Image (tube, rainbow, N blue to C red; front, side, top):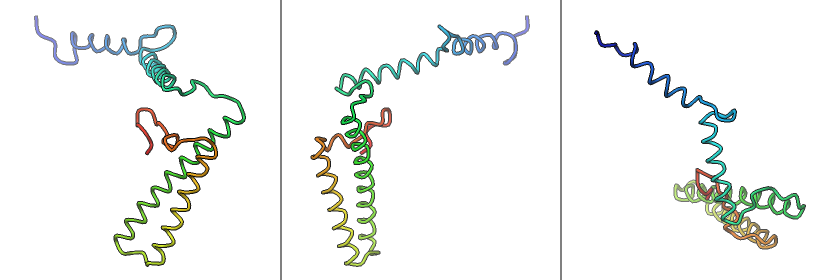
Length: 139
């Protein structure tokens, strides 16, 4: 009996079987969707083991603190970017001495302001480093 060429006969059945396993549903969900839900569940469990709340707390004081944490994180991230850019420009010689002084003072004042607000609202410097899940820490 002649042997089947690729794409004919015997080679198609395993592909259909593999594809059908991915598309198979369990309780209305595909195997891929179940896998994604398992990854999400494990991330939630890891967060709860680290002491982070598993759900949003509607307490107005906590909402303000959460928003402040996010805003301060973004401000600190931008401050670090500006600081790096200022250093590159200073090393390249594109800033005058006066501009270097002005930028240095502004960045120091911004850093002190972030630190003061962090302390005022009972946050730690580590609280401003968002966990981006699989991407790791923001800063």
